[in-house]
Length: 60
Length: 219
Image 1 (tube, each protein chain N blue to C red):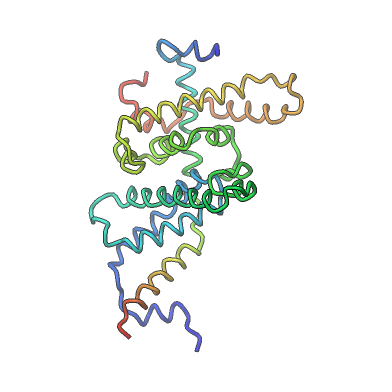
Image 2: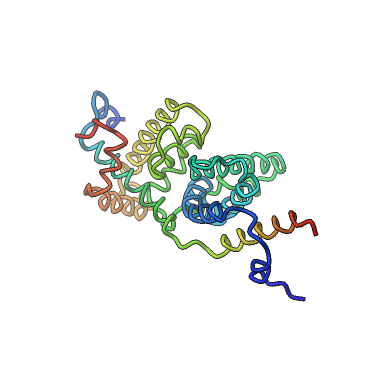
């Protein structure tokens, strides 16, 4: 509780620094996933639904 | 008669402007990141992204060219996540094991490759606070785009993000304040958290993004 009380009436410098650190950590986690190589299954999926679509539209 | 995929690809006429497919594929990494944050689970996240891609593909005619495709896809993904979860609850509300395996409730798998204190703390937030914080704080969406994705007004998103930040800090403070010698069994975990915080402490780059978001509030 004491830390919260310190925070009232204008955030302390320390609290802001920690908020920024948390923000960086969130971006690091998110970007970490963004930067992972995309597994082939996603490309395969697009190809499959594309084909299924073509199949459906084909008057045959 | 073996029909390979590439063979079929060559034979048929393109049915859709190639742009949509290219754009969709280019956004897959972002969809995976958002899905990972929602489900907290690698496999459930990728399943969710695949469902999203199928949905997006099926309704690609309803996408207005020139509008934000990323936000459109995120909206589909989020809707899919909550509807899957609702369905799972309806189908097996008595099955505790199934409930624990459901997307979004897994406690044993983290959404990033590493299990940091922030990752753990994030899991303790209510869904609506976590998603708002991820969209704005990590995904770089404007409050307005985030509001459109989660279907509420801008003010609500702002307050959710603010509450999420405050709650995260409080959770981390609570962990931080556990004296290691009084909790011998958690000594290692606590040291780990301390080490992580130390690593996070020195402020460096990425301040630009923070400044953009908190215009004028940065000292």
